[in-house]
Length: 538
Image (cartoon, rainbow, N blue to C red):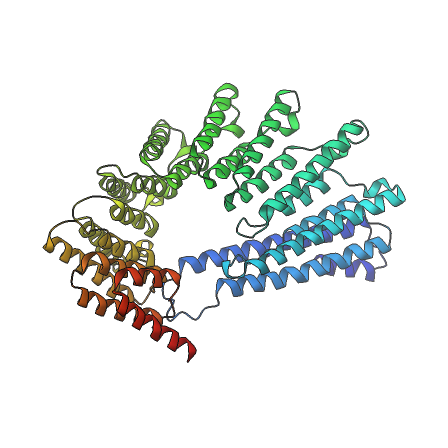
């Protein structure tokens, strides 16, 4: 529409100026946002509708992402053409370049773990384009001394944002964070050299928070130093703000990023330290931008869930009770959600505490009750059920595989009656098989019942119309045979059949072979794996 209006202007003898072309660039930037949001929504819908992978013929999420990339590439080319035209007309200005950098930073990239190197190359290319645009602007400004194209805070922030926006699952996150920080230091140096003359490049809260976010994403790769770096920059922001720099006051987004950084590196105590700092600052100032919300609390609880252990479970449960108490007192910003409860249940499952699994199931039942009385947003989903089943699998509860099987049956019955939110998935069946594999204690009858529960879950998964076995399925069922089948002859026979089925589904990997070796006799292992090698040669 904007392009058509420009064409009509020119037909009427009106000459577009910098405002006209900058408006067109902003329209392209908004189109980039729309394409990105539509792609994310499509991926979300596909995850929700991934109900029948055996028959579903809809395009995959990767196809959807490639389509979005193609559309965005066309928009980038169009924007580059407009900027080039403005340069030829000598009407390009700071706004033009800032918008172009922003457009380049909005390019999306696939996040498939099967093509990490390709993903990294594409991500690096988009950042390289943004860098090239920034340096083109800087070179022109230096060569011409034209203040109209001098980089400003927005220019630096756009490029820093380009580093920070790339998904954490794409390799190279730490290097991107370091480059983002280098730009921040460049801004600080320029401003310090001439505070009056270089006010336009003074770092602000966006500058610092984007670097914090970049380091927080890098911490996903187990880089403990990145979490500490994020904390260091946060403390710097606090010191600057307390020294009178209003424009760098940390906000909820900044604190949450640091909490997530420590959560990813298994440091829940540091995550809770940040949460406590937020609470203290809010109590002193009553500044709503510092008030901890559901995301802050849940991220901290999730950190404890990732760590595991008795103390972690107790801290997670205490934080949940704090949220519930605050919510019951009228604080709607800290209402626990399904992710909160899932994290607490996971923490309980990893705790090793007596009756932890029973407490986890009690939370699940309470959520069922609350959701049936109006709070539909707290209705349990498959992830929550899976967490409870996993809690039983990890527990020492007598009859734990029976409890796991009952939960699976409840899920199947409810989903058959239309509640698709709790339809079992591959993880559900695997967790029940795991519960059986871990039920090696007890007399013959108890072990036999556990074996039958594991076998039924294994068979049901293979008969399912809406989910499929994974390599982990075969590892776990081979473990069932190892722990529960006493007859070596029967165990060897079953192990051979299971391995043959695994090979048929093309799911054999090192973990499956390793577990097979533990499960069956040396002779059977040699025969079965030899046939696997022969099969590969054919």
